[in-house]
Structure formats: structure tokens, C-alpha cells
Image (cartoon, rainbow, N blue to C red; front, side, top):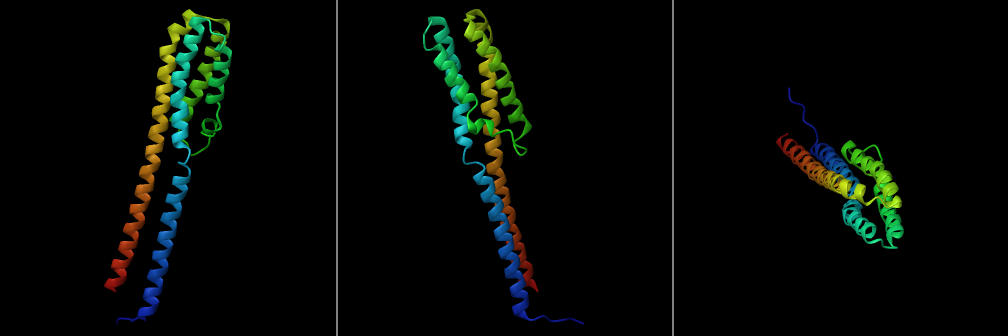
Length: 171
């Protein structure tokens, strides 16, 4: 025996689920995008550390009186709010680990720069710049993953809505 339901009840239920899926997928996508607002700033600041590292070496080699001011600028960039805010639960460990390595190695580099240790700087700057590059790359991959997540959520929401409409119409 086939039980017939009123069309309006079936349509109302389908419409409710369509709206619910739309709100969920849009909400999650917007939250993901909101967390991406400062990604470009973080990548730019991290990338600027490379140039600042070389500027510190130039200052050290030329005996520039600007060395201390440039060390402070480097420290400010390294500890900028957009970078320190990366230490949250949803940021991948690769990003947090690379940032921690930069901070730890900066302590040694800053100490050596304050002592005017040019041979140490010349022997270690390439490694430090490579660490900066790896940090920038980790930030870039993290930002790309977030964009892929938005695409996946949007696709899943669209497929869910299409499937719901399809099965509602087949009834």
C-alpha cells in the first residue's frame, strides 16, 4: 500500500533542507574565507624577512650605524601580530614549527649581530634565509589549502542541494 503525502509538506521539507544546506555550506565557506583575510599580509611580512636578513648583513659588513635600528625592525616583523597569531589550534603544525625555528634561530643571529660577528653571519645566513623560504612556502600551502576547502565545501553544498531536489522530484 502506498501512502501519499501532501505535495506541500514534501516541498516544505525539501525547501527547509535546501535552505539548511545553503546556510551551512555558505557559513563554513565564509568562516574559512574570514580566516584567510590576513594570509597575504603574513606571506608578505614573512617574505620581507629575507630582504631584511641581507640588509642586516650589509649593515654589519659596512659598519652602518643603522644596524641596531634594522635589528629592531626585523624583530618587530618577526613578532608582528599576524605572525604570532599563527599559534592557534587550526594552523598546521608545519607552519607553527617553521615559525618556531625562525624565532629560535633569530635569537642566535641577533646575539651574533649585536657582537659584530661577521664571519658567523656569513657562514649562517644562507641557512637562515632557507628557513625563511620554507616558512613562506608553508604559509602559502596553508592559504592554498584553505581556498581548496572553500571550493570543496561549496561543491559539497551544491551537490547536496542538487541531490535533495532530485530525490524530492522523484517522489
